[in-house]
Image: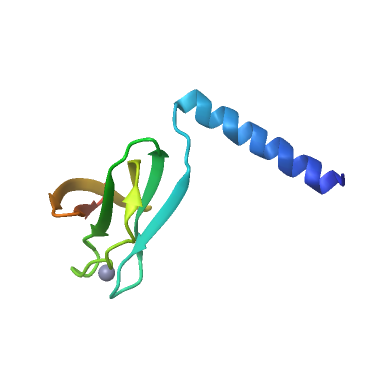
Length: 107
Ligand SMILES: [Zn+2]
């Protein structure tokens, strides 16, 4: 095993501990970007894959007023992480799609 491989392993171990500490284990990330202006909107992180609920996610873009394309269907309990400079505002569920509305963070 090379030095690089060892340090990568150590990093993974540390990340795992960090997540155990916060109670969040990220199983997959689904980053939604605006379909019009291309900015990052929200990171849908599956944290509880055992929850058998499947939704698509779509986020409104507070920058240009458009929105992201709907994500692929995502199964599991999720944590919604707004992109830098944005705050979660509200969600509504219509059919199998969760519509996320975001606002620009005011400092
Ligand atoms: Zn946009």
